[in-house]
Amino acid sequence: MQFKDIFLVLLVFAPTALSLTFKEPTVLVSVLVRNKQHTLPYFLSNLENLNYPKGRMSIWIRSDHNVDRSIPILKLWIDSVKDAYHSIYSEFDEDASSYPGEVGLAHWTDERFSHMMSLRDNALNYARENWADYILSIDADVFLTNPNTLTYLISKNRTLVAPMLYSEGLYSNFWHGMTEDYYYLRTDEYKPILEKENVSCYSVPMIHSCVLVDLRRSESDFLTYRSDKIENYDGPHDDIIVFALSAKKNNINLYICNEDHFGYITVPLEQEDDKSYDLEHLRNIKMDILNSGQSLYVNDLLKEYTDLPRKDTMMFDNIFMINLKRRPDRRKRMNQCFDELGLKVETVDAVDGKALNETFLQTLRFMPDFKDPYHKRPMKLGEIGCFLSHYHVWEEIVQRGYQSTLVLEDDIRFEGFFKSKVHSVMNEVLKILNWDLVYFGRKRLQEKDEPWIEGARYLVEAGYSYWTLGYALSLRGAKKLLEAEPLTKLVPVDEYLPILFDKHPHQNWKGYYPKRDLVALSAAPLLLYPTHYTGEKGYVSDTEDSIIIPEAIIAKEDL
Image 1 (cartoon, rainbow, N blue to C red):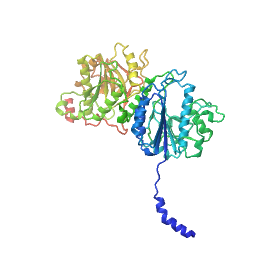
Image 2 (cartoon, one colour):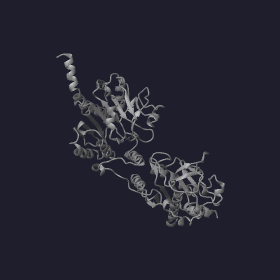
Image 3 (spheres, one colour):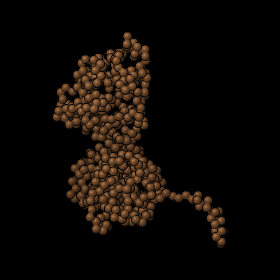
Image 4 (cartoon, helix red, strand yellow):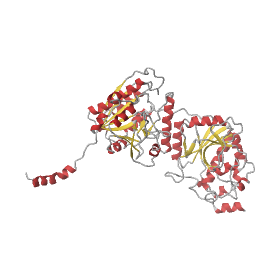
């Protein structure tokens, strides 16, 4: 056959060749589990929810030394999905004994590290022996909330790559620095990656907890979790450090990618911590997701293995949450937050400013001199509704004789470890005989320092502040707020409070309230923040998104 004939044949069959489609690469997912019954329902549900053909995935699971229900949960899940995945290879050791010398669930002895290193290396070798294209090594306290994570990682075409995971504070699943003796080193480059000041895939000295390895690359054959397989190894006896050094010694780069939001990871426990700390870390992650308007996914099969705390009102006589009936989305999210936190809360239907008519408005009296400090306008109907909502709560407190109450709005996010922090703050508050109000969340408007309460670690004197996101109120404080008769000289509630504790900068406004002895404190640091700030995507204000008081009402007040 002549060259020109071969060329013609190629032209004829080229369209067919170009139309060929290929199957996705095969992936082995390796998972090690010990005492993770609290995270497993969420971990397994989100793993199963990955948008990747299950027929191209195999699962390798090992679990031992459990004192909880980790193994029953794993068996239940495996039985439900075994026909969907290409294969599932699991081994479970029912022996619940600890390692020799182990003094707690978070204590890592040399024997425990050795066992972990062997298991991880066994998974790596199993993937190689079974011709897997990739291995995804993932810990059981990682929650891949982005279903496209695995597809994304494969698309990066790296030998070693990890998705950046979020947690509490500055913790994540990568390092940007390593000391000369191979331990963690915080660098100036770490935080900009974590906070996504720039987005890319960055070469770093350490990735862990969720790592994809491209086994098709010949250099991957040199990767190991066992120090005895590395010539002249001089590093710590630690699985993730051994793995990172095996990559470094063979000039294999490790990449962390922050180009999307992939999921979460719990903070590792300190040696002296017990399981309760792990539960708190999980709760903080779930609360963070709820703050974004979502929830951490768990399928129906595993939902029965999730636990919620028993509800109480902490040290308060009652907790009120103010919510507009026409905002069921906020009510639902807040109730989910209360379920997670274990808070028993009474919902109060807010006064809807949009429903206030002129006849009702004429029963009120407005401060003649008031103009919004920023917009130079009278009050809006939403601001009136907000004030009346809080006012009615104050009335309930007095009528029921509650000595201490927590008042919450419905657009707040809770700081991590919220309940324990509230206990710390209120234990200090209750030592102060004459307290009236304690801000848990606010917008501080004065630049000068606010003095600390003598002998306190978490309390300052409140200065001029905006917002009524959440505050503790004593019976005496509620009485003062009512006895000042604010409905006869009405201003927005977050202007009213600073007037009553005599920290408002407008002297003429304070003149309408000659008795200004409200004792107002603030938690420091704050315990509550808005879910959204002005201008952010998703920001909605029911007070600002309303009309100004009709001119006829204002004119009547001037007469």
